[in-house]
Length: 211
Image 1 (cartoon, rainbow, N blue to C red):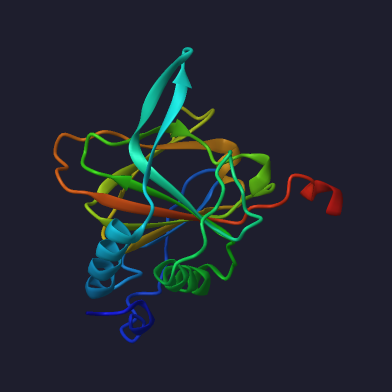
Image 2 (cartoon, rainbow, N blue to C red):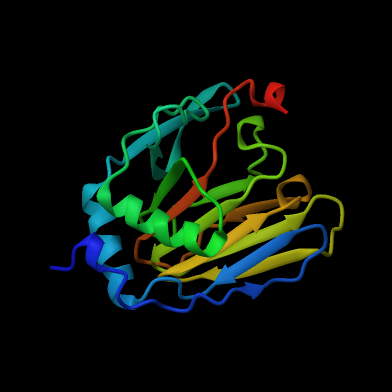
C-alpha cells in the first residue's frame, strides 16, 4: 500500500495552463498528481474523511445538499458555521503539493464528495469576507471527471466550461470571485464518484482591522 508520505517521488506536471478570461486570473494544472497518487488519495479520502450530509433552508423548507461535505483545517479556521476537523496525514500531503505550485499557504480545506452525476453544486462565488479581498481558491479533483462551469456577472457571453479530471488542480485568484460565478452541474453521463478539495485561507472576522 502506498502511504501519503511516499507519494511525491513521481512528480507530475507542475506547469500551469493559463485560461484567458476577462477580469480573472485562472490557472489549470491538468495532472498535478500522478495516476498512482490520485488513485491512492481518492481511496484514502473516500474511506477516511468524516463525510456529512447537510441541509439548507430553501424557501423556508429544509433541503438536503446534493453532495457530502467535510471541513478540515487549523482550529481558528471556522467558516460558514463549519468547525474544522484536524488535518489528516493525507490532507497535509495534498496541501503541500498545492502550496508548492501556488506559492501560497492555506489553513483550511472544504471537501465535497459527488457520489455520481446527480450530485452537484449550484451557481455561487467564493466571496465571503472571511476569505479576504481577493482570495485564492485552489481546487483539487480526484475521481470522475466533472465539468466546472463559470459565467461572468455582467458580460453575458463570457462563459467557460472546464473539465476537471483525476489529479487536476484548478486555481482561481485575483479579482475572479468579484466578477465570476461557478457551478458543477448535474450530468446523467457521470456514474462514478468525484472528490473535490478547495483549499482556502480563512481570516479572522476582524481581519480588516489589521490592515
